[in-house]
Amino acid sequence: MLPSIQHILYSTDLGTNTRQVFRYAISLAQHYQAQITLLHILEPLTSYGNALLETYIPQEISQQHHQQALNKVRQTMQKRIERFCEEELHSTPEDSHLIAGITVLEGHPAHSIVEQAKILQADLIVMGTHSHSALGEILIGSTARKVTQLSPIPVLVIPIIR
Image (tube, rainbow, N blue to C red):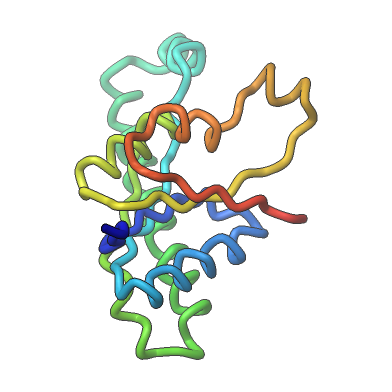
């Protein structure tokens, strides 16, 4: 039996060259009559950043400011993703039904992407990858590489060409 793709999780960092990756997700969704959920992950503040903040600002106030800032970033990202979808789908309005939802979460990218794919019962993860030098890959790692290692479902990785 051939695999069926009904739900695609499209993970994006909303970089300048990610439209080509989104186009792959749209093409697959059109072909399989699938739904796409767009996902953007906001990385949490590091423990060093938190410690630095708490040195100058009481923890209660710091947490309130963090939550307010996080909510504002989520709203901004949500609008940005919506605009991104509208700009890419404007020439084919009949395809706007392909977008099942837009999710903005805080967490560590690779783990959050795989966890969200499980929650959504996605059949495929589509994401882009930036090319780094070999040394850069070893030192900083690659979110796409980590996702392919962690994910129990297929991952389509599109190279992002600058």
